Amino acid sequence: MATAITAQGHAFRMLTSTGANVAHAAVRTASARTTLLAVTAGTYRSYSKGLRPRGPGPMPLGSPKDQAEFEQLVKDAAATPATSHPDAKTPVPDEFVGDTNPSTGEVGGPKREPVRFGDWSFKGRVTDF
Image (cartoon, rainbow, N blue to C red):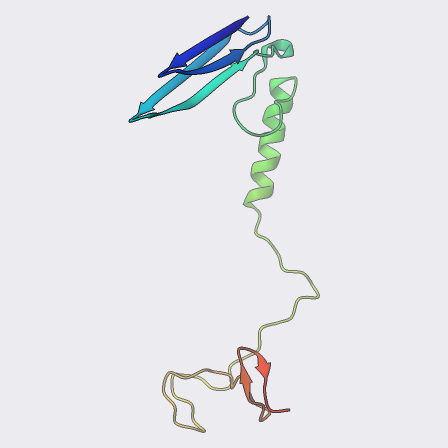
C-alpha cells in the first residue's frame, strides 16, 4: 500500500507493508517551505499471552508471580545503601578544628595546604622544576 502526501508542490511518499495498520503523516507549511514533521508507518507486534511492554525496559516475565518477585528484588537492591570498596582511600583528616588556621591566622582558608611541600602548582601541575 503506498500513500502520497502532497503539499505546495512537494510530494512525500509513504510506503507501508501489507500488514501495516497505522500510517500517520503530519505536514506543516511555513512560508515557502514545507516540512514533513512525522511519518510513521509500522506494524504492531503481538506478544504471546497478551503481554505488552509498559515502556522502556525488559519484557515482563511470563507469570504475574514471577514479575512481582522480580520487581521486589529490584526495589530491595535499589534501597540498600551502597558500601564503599574496602580498598578505597579514607578521607584525610583536617589539620585544625574551626574556621581559623592557628599557624597562619587565615580565616576561611583551606583546611589542608594544597602545596605543603614547597611546590608551585597551577591547577594540579607543578611549575617549579
